[in-house]
Structure formats: C-alpha cells, structure tokens
Image (tube, rainbow, N blue to C red; front, side, top):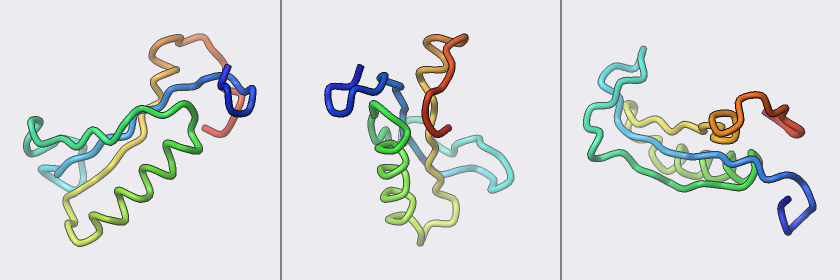
Length: 83
C-alpha cells in the first residue's frame, strides 16, 4: 500500500529518447535513453511524462513513454486506478 493515500502501489517507469523513425519505437542510441524515474502510481508517472514531453517539444524525434511495471511484475493483477 502507498503510505500517502492507502492505495496499492502500482509501479510505473517513465523513460524516453530519440526515435530513429517517427512511425516506430526504435531508439537512435540506447546509451542516451533518459530514464526519468519509477513512480508509485499512474498519476505521478503521467505528471513526470508530461513535464518531460513538454520540455522536449522542439525535438520532433524525442518521445517519452510510461511503462506499467506492475503489469510486468504481476501479470494477473487487476488495475484499481486509471490505466
């Protein structure tokens, strides 16, 4: 449980980097990936994603993503909050 609000901890990873092609998700340089952080819920991950995405708006090839780590750690677990 999250200490802040009593909700279950649903880990999310926020990361990004420059894409080779805007129609795909292959990165130009894996060593240059920006690992923003791991967050205890989707709401905080989305806020971090939005801030990083907005700060890189001048680079059309830069993309940030939110990965639902909790789904990878426990595939059968049901989400209790927003996706």
